[in-house]
Amino acid sequence: MSEAKLFLDFKGLLCPMPVVKLAQAIKQIQIGEMLEAVATDPGVMADIPAWTRTTGNELVTLEKREDKTIRFVVKRAK
Amino acid sequence: MTETIQLALKTLEAQLNQPLETALEACARCGLCAEACHYYRAEPKVEHIPAFRAEQLRSVYRYEHDFLSRLFPVWTGAKKLDEPMLANLTEIAFSQCTLCRRCTVNCPLGVDTPLMMRAIRAMATASGTAPEILVMLADAAIEKGKDPSFYKEMFLEQIKEMEEQLRDVTGDENATIPVEKQGAKILYVPLAGAHTILPPAVVFNAAKEDWTLSIFEASNYGVFLADVNRAKQVAKRIVDEANRLGVKEIVIAECGHAYASYRWDVPNWFAGQFDFKVRSLIEVLGDYIREGKIKVDPTAIPEGVTYHDSCNLARNGGLIEEPRYVLKNVAQDFREMTPNKDEAICCGGGGGLVALAEYAERRIAAGKPKADQIKQTGAKVVVAACENCRLQIGDINEHYNLNVKTTAITDLVVRAMRLPKPLPGHEAEYLFEGEGAAIARE
Ligand code: SF4
Ligand code: SF4
Image (tube, rainbow over all chains, first blue to last red; front, side, top):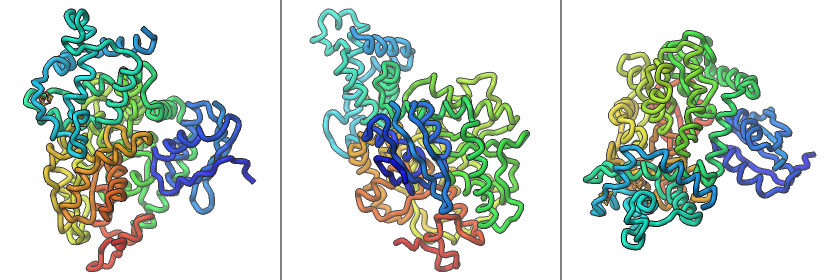
């Protein structure tokens, strides 16, 4: 069970749009809260960790699932 | 004067060189640039005239540089920069100008309005007022260059999967996607995502090219911020990779600003470390077709196809005939937009605007002239060799009910190569049964 406050569907979005949408969405949750997203563009496997590293937010999970979608959970730290 | 304003003015001063000073001083106020700008065409109002935009920066420049203007600012329309003015300038430069240069080529004096808009973008970036997302995207790219290890393993896994897909669609058990191949002739730099890796991989394998895939992406958000420091750090990743691998040539994915920057700016930024030929993937496709290295079926795509000239490729990059050569070899019914080539109307998605969600409404409104052009061709497929253009055309397609399909040149070439199986995600568009080949989603 995820404790995420917000669930986002980035399926079909090509990079950099998942990062653009994530940067907008993170403002909707409080510091310490998490959001969960599902994407299909493999570019997110590099772009999401790069974004969390530079913005200081925490990447809790990043995984490729059986159905080839990529699920990630980010905790707002700033 | 606040620190923000000091930084902004310092950045303006630091940028002053002959081209910028000429642009700031020369304008006959003839208004001929108005019709050149897609914002004005979409909504003819004074704020949408390029010269009006430029005047906002000129008024600041006059105040700083003209003695009379400082004494009697009302006479000359000079203005002392303050925070609301900087915010206004920033908004103009990031939301009302795609840096397409159509005004410049249509100005009798050749006034470089986009150069002034870039100067404002640089002022905003240096003073911390530029759109946050562009800064984030540039910084994330720089981060990848500092330490690729945090994503490299995942990246290589993805490439392995793509390689399997490549073998499956081509039926070629030996097809590969080489990464970090020492001494390869070509370093191909994709965009993030499989859609700019798999189709070119099909082509490179068919042409038996000696190539290797970059672990970085070609796009450079430092360029959109007009932040040379960030732009150089983003580009350095690829320059270093090319030097490390000892390649002869860098081939850039279908991307307007990346091609223009690697073709014109990067060799200057890295003079002495940049001994590479730079080509766009479109040029490579053209050469393969010309030399018979790949076989394409000229009857494969019967539906009407039109081509949108990305400003960075055509007007700023000189890539005008090459995409047409490729398209005419794969599409039976190729239709031109009017005007086109170096006079093409911007789609409205350039200058990094597609990443700026806060200005989406404005961007889509400014895409109306392009939507009208597309409609007039009656084409069912709109080809654009730039990711930003494709995203924008996708949005205007929906908004203005154009009922078209947007695609890259490479995707059409691969379709015309008649592979045994369609690329993943393209199944609906390919019937692969000769006569019947048509877009199923009509
Ligand atoms: S066309 Fe050139 S000279 Fe005329 S108003 Fe526009 S920028 Fe000024
Ligand atoms: S560069 Fe393009 S968008 Fe910017 S003012 Fe000129 S015509 Fe308009």
